Image 1 (cartoon, helix red, strand yellow):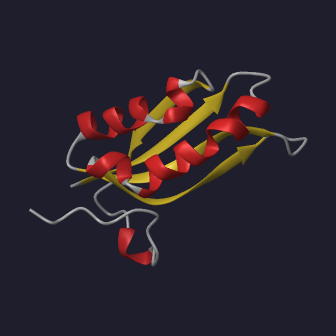
Image 2: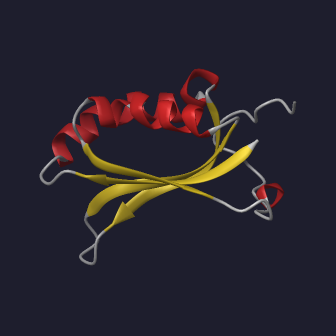
Length: 110
């Protein structure tokens, strides 16, 4: 298994669309993209003025391809809300066990 920091930045002026799509996005996150990944933690991002500007998540995935497929399948991305997505691998020393309540089911160990 591998861990990734996923950072998504939104296009400008998408607040109304984001609110409309949010339930679908939350379902996607809760399912781990229908089992592609485990979303350990995530949250909205805000700019210096406190306006929503994106979101982040810590993902557990079998590989980078699954993490990328999760990001690409997010309803926010499909609706054109997300402008850019960065996936940064986390080191083997990342302490995922310290996150007590994952946002989606944990992936089975191999």
